Image (cartoon, rainbow, N blue to C red; front, top):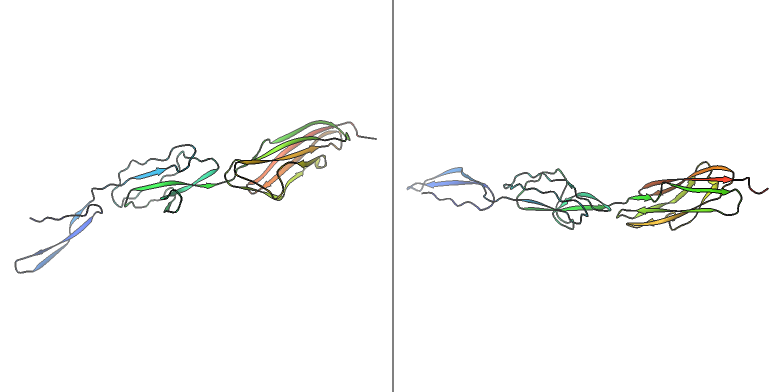
Length: 231
């Protein structure tokens, strides 16, 4: 009888050497092949996601089987975008992108990786100043909020807050907490105060532009002047 003990994990093959009574040896290369009874799994972890569910993989993989890495599925995280998987929850392990096909040799636990992004917006797409007498000596003021709903800091260009358009002289930035060259931190906002002082009767309009590291925002400005002003 010939007994061969195989390793518990890795599949492979073994050579067999048979000796006769005269001590002569005959080698049979890869005479016996064996497979592993051990199977391996892939587990996905949300790792800070604020909504959705991590992908699941119910496959029992054999040693060295290719694994197709899943995408984010329904996972999402406020202020962040999905940037792949890592074998470490803090990103210091082996990184895998969706669609990669590594060969599995042990159970694989993967953690979602998230990259902070900026997401700039404004509290309104237009500001209406109503009607004001020409040359009244006072202004109508409106306040606009500039928001950052992302987790990355947003920089305001310098100059970044400007007014352009047909009646640019009728509108001005009169205050607020947003500043040229300033910044908006994660999940925060700043304000811009715009004043209207019509220089002539009739409909008056212009455009407020806010240039940031996350792109430009524009807000339409509209008001109306009455009368002809002081004589």
